[in-house]
Image (tube, rainbow, N blue to C red):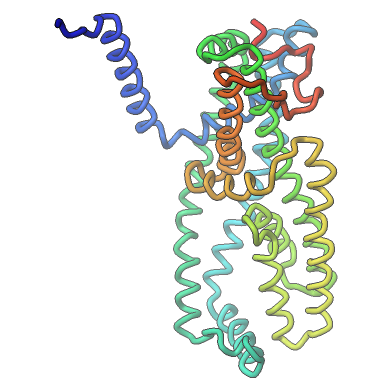
Amino acid sequence: MQNRQISNTAINQIMLIVIIILICLLVFKNLTYYLPGFLGAITLYVLFRNSYFKLTEQKGMKKSLASLLIIISSLVFIVLPLWALIDYLIPQLTSFFANKDVIITKFNSIKEYMSDKPVLKEIDMSDSALLQIVSSLTKYVPSIINSVAEVAINIIVALFVLYFMQVHGRAMESYIAGMIPFSKQSKQELWSEFFMMVRSNAIGIPILGAVQGVVAIIGYWIFGVENYVFWGILTGAASIIPILGTMAVWVPISIIVLSSGETANAIGLMLYCFILVGGIDNVLRFTLLKQLGDVPPLITVFGVLFGLNVFGMLGLIFGPLILSSIGLLIKVYRNEYGTSKTPPIITASSTDVDPSAGSIIEK
């Protein structure tokens, strides 16, 4: 009995797939430094996609001019405010960690306050513990300063890539749609989920952090916290921390105020932050952010943890997106190859993708 041989066509296909995968891995490995720039370009493309196609296909504006207009708008309303915020925070953080006398004074007041309190007195508040905390925090400051150059380079990369993505937008979308081996319905479901997740995280998370930061600044000013603007901005930035959120900042500040003898201000600050700073999170999530996209909390929490570790700050957007895509792909698999029909899984609302701008699978 003659053994059945693998056809040359199958061997050639396998070899071609292996070569493609190896080349992609090689490119990915050597362009990892610019990965945030590429992810930023994808984010901006999704956010401005409908506006760009309205300008070019309905208003008749030249593609290059429309893209440059959107890039300038991105610089003015996104990049420059973000850069100004970083430029303000880095000197403040450097100055704070360099002023060890103030840190020791605050630490000693907390230690004295906790020394005769039940449970609290069991916490290690020795000088060695303080030095360990300060050293563990200060080691991140040089990396933050060094990352400024990386951020600047990736901003340039993002805007550069965005220009070509927009100018060749329709052709790019048609090419991507042709590469996805699914039905038209499944492709639309993937696009809708991707659009919703990117918009929800790219718009929702900054809005949530900004509002909580402003509310915190007002509270710190009312209750006499020194350098209230700096601490308010840090509180808004801490909103991205899974589980703890803004509590990672306002709880230690309240303890410091309490340990310094200002009991009334400390209690007032705790109540203010718990009710208003923490409460605004729930209000926005059930109103504005729900309109942008109803992302499950567990997906957000574990997606942020995963994304920050892999992609840096842009992991806030793409971490939850990757996690949510697992369940989405399982549903698409059931649609494509399952024996039973499943209900539609398009989670974005009808206004998420402007019909006049078309969809990624139309052409």
